[in-house]
Length: 269
Image (cartoon, rainbow, N blue to C red):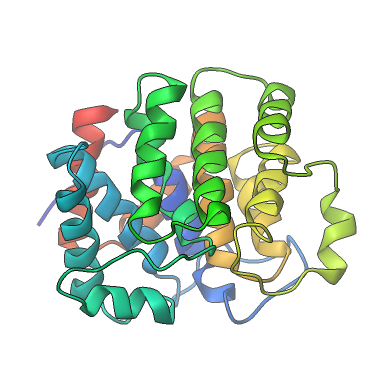
């Protein structure tokens, strides 16, 4: 048994917390920020598993594509019923899997460890690109991962929200001017990077604190766990994750996932 007495309140805990909080609303959407953060059914999904697979790749060998593929396959097959998309499920079963042109938000949901390991924005972008293209090699899939990683890194080094917004809009041509109150009534389930990453970034930009970013993301409806994982991954670089949220999320990980989380935290945080 692992007893967790202290964890860093910044880092990949943001993506994990967002995923677990959003897990009960992925196929049971709501359009309000007034909801219980955790319920008895709150659990980790593919977002957390793949985030920790990327983390374990970076712990072992951030250069090797083979190690990256092996980590994604190992953790994906270890938890086969975590909510993966059909094409990724097929990828997991192949002996020598090849990228399949995905434009979905799986590349963005798992990218946050790259933003905490890279020592410059160029290195962050390089790691994020590598983490995406082994599966999500469509330009939109790559862009979603890079934009998310850039936002996390800029927040990590102390950039203001306006600076983060300007950078993402100029470099990735995402429209971040829309307001959540205008998006929410018409927003529906959308697993594409193009249709979920900008909205998730806006959830961070409009937030007052970490918890507010998660509530924003879940309140849009749609792919709630992934939106909250993306928004949470950025928010946890800008604000500390509250103790009550972090520890309630961590205690929902099993031994193996928790071990990776702790190893990453100790090595990089």
